[in-house]
Length: 102
Image 1 (tube, rainbow, N blue to C red):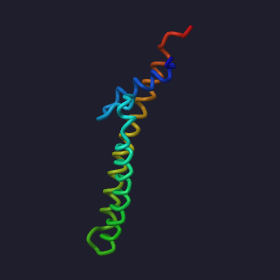
Image 2 (cartoon, helix red, strand yellow):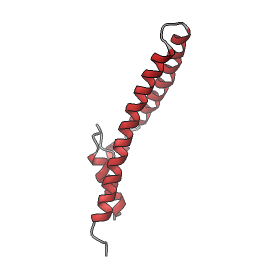
Image 3 (cartoon, one colour):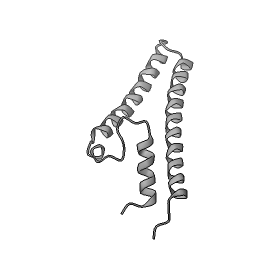
């Protein structure tokens, strides 16, 4: 039997604007998402390395690279924060307004 918290988390996940819904069993079966995220992190690492080389060769300035990275991480932070606030809201609403279990 699902708990109030479990139901609240599923409701929160389902309300997110995601390509795939986190609560669906078919998503859990897909390891591809994990692999894509893993390679994205590698891409970010190698992009930073490429930016460092570009700075050392005078192709880009330190400030350009810094501005680009701050902009990128700010967007990521804002999206994650927005999603976390949505989850907290869904969980709080479900816990506070759900009928008591017998």
